[in-house]
Every structure is written in C-alpha cells, then in structure tokens.
Length: 244
Image (tube, rainbow, N blue to C red):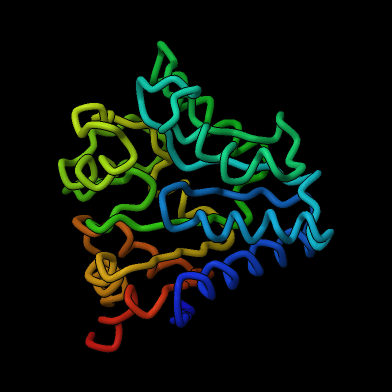
C-alpha cells in the first residue's frame, strides 16, 4: 500500500486527479470505477479543469459508479446520478453510453445487480477504482457486518451512514434506507485502486484500514490485501496513521 499524506484537501484532490489523468493518458480506453460523496468532489473539479485545458480526453473512457440509492429517482437532487452530472459528466466528454450508474428504481433488484456485474465483465473489468471511505469504514455501501457481499447487491444502510448522509437531504427522514452497491470482490478485482479520505472524522477509519488486520467490521481493511492500492489523505485524515 502506497500512502500519501497531503497538506490539505486541495493538494489531495490534485494528486488524485493527476493519477486518474495519467491512467487515461496511458490507456485512453480505460475503465474507471467512480465514487461519490463529499471527498471526490475536488478531484472531479480538477479533472474538469484539466479537460478544459486540453490535458486529458475522456472520449473513449468507460465508467462504472459504485452505488446508487434504492428507490430514489435519478432526477432527484440527491441521487448519485445527479451528483455525477453536476460535478463531472456535464463538463467532460465521456460518451453517455459509456456512463454506468446502478439503477435504483428497477423493479427486479436481483436482475439489476446481475446485469450490472455483467456490464463490468463485458467492459473487461475496472482498470482504476476510485474509493472514498465512510467514517465507519465502509467502501461503496459495503457496510460493517459479520459477512460481506462479494458482488453488486441491495444493502440496508446503517444508522451511522444514514446520519452521515442526512446533510445531503432536507430532512433526515428523507434519506433512503437502502442502496445498490458494487460488492467487495468486484472492487478487489480492479487492477488499481485509489482511496481518498479527508477530515478528522475519517482518521479512525483510516487507522483501522491500515492496521495490518482484515476486519469485516471495517470493510475497507480488506484493501490491504490488494497489490495495487494507493491511499491519498490530507493531514487530518492521516493523523492517526503513525500511531499504529
């Protein structure tokens, strides 16, 4: 595991954007796994700026998002579809038919999950997976549990995650209680993984995920077993790493 502790959120975001851009320059047909949430926003904005300067071209890139709320229409202001359009897709040249986000409104959830996995397989798998981390150690919406799902699945969100995500909704009771999420094995099959974390509220989770132990109560800890994992954090999120 390569660990970069950056001075602040801005420098962390720039380093992450450079890693994504480098991947695309080396392989213009890269398949990217994309994350949502507060942390990757700066990275997306940096990539948009790089695109506008002509430094990176997304015209052959294929993307797969990690997750989407279940039962939330994609047009909803807090859907991850809207998040991706508002922060990234509307400003770069990823072809629309190359953008993949789980369908949270599908009538047959099992079918939706199986088809999403098949689309990833047909694309050749994920070349570079971007991850955030929840304050409880989740990646995607793979929540702490005695057992972890390996492939794309419907997950019941924990109260901790619901509380954390309530800032994106007018009322906490409006936060969806379930989501579709890519599973642990699918994430681990990515050729390269970059995990981003910012803020003191992520420091405990970062310490646990770099502890040298795999613990299903900290799903991100399994990333320690991946051969090409890079961790990029700001000083606050990385504050406890040296205390291990």
